[in-house]
Amino acid sequence: MRLTLSTRVRGHYHEVMARFDEQLLLRLSPPGIKVELLHYGGSLPGQRVHLRLRILGLIRQEWESEITEAGEHEGEIYFTDEGRRLPFGLTSWRHRHIVRQAGPGHSIIIDDIHYSSRNALLDLLLWPLFYVQFAYRKPVYRAFFRRMARQQRTG
Image 1 (cartoon, rainbow, N blue to C red):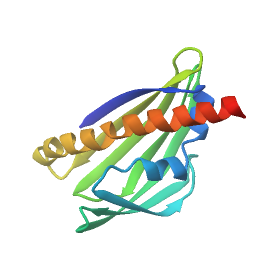
Image 2: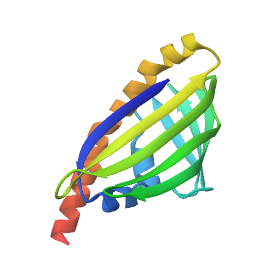
Image 3: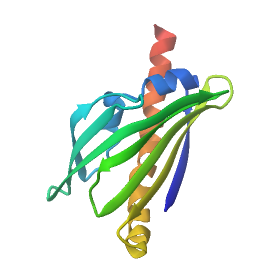
């Protein structure tokens, strides 16, 4: 299955991508999901991110991803993480994080996700859950990068 969401934020695409770090990652979890960051290696190929998730205080899962590619094209920069240890019956996860220049002082963050589970029905059932989880990021991204732009202006 595929899920793609786009969010317009303030900031040059290089500056926005530079802030894709553990501080931002920890802000992106929606209510009901507690995230413990066990390891944050970065966003370059070969680096890993390892999370422990607690969902609704009951379900405990681990998620580990490896950065498999990163690159830059004219006006766009990206990295891709692929799941190595996945929860929820997922069998594959590929998430490309794209930041594209969108005019002076603005960028678009694109979350382009491909996933699969043990069966097609579960894929369909997971789609709205992932949609809600990633839609939650939109106002978080906007506020985070608005604050960053303000701090840069005030020095």
